[in-house]
Image 1 (tube, rainbow, N blue to C red):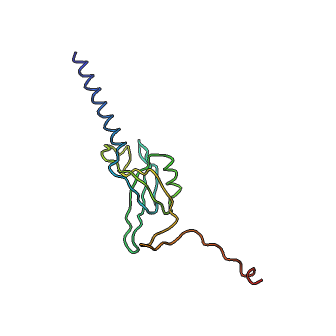
Image 2: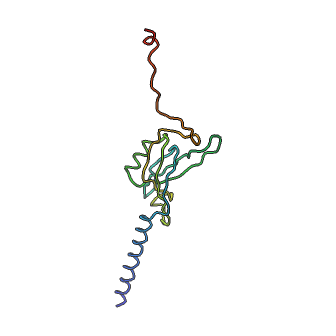
Image 3: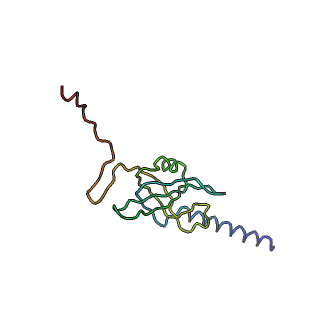
Length: 144
């Protein structure tokens, strides 16, 4: 009879642990977006390989650069972030709280989407477009 009770307790512990991990992975403490330049992105880990990155946040001219560290689980998103390395992007993220090991990622911020930004805002109402300007007609063609 004690074996049945022991098995029931073990099954209950496994169900509770599974429910905890499911809740921690599906529920988000917060979500939002961060804009900046992806300056580091790598696939690392001894046993659990995760995509880890670093975003240099957009700041006011003359101020020190703040870094946003993030983790990516989805391979399609990781490919998009990798392609955007060195470009100005907006990362959509979800913050997960309560994950017990670094096997899920080194940070609490999990990126779920990336958008490459074509404009650089310098301040309220001041935007510098990064798209190339239309080329002017050659001087020889204009003089004819």
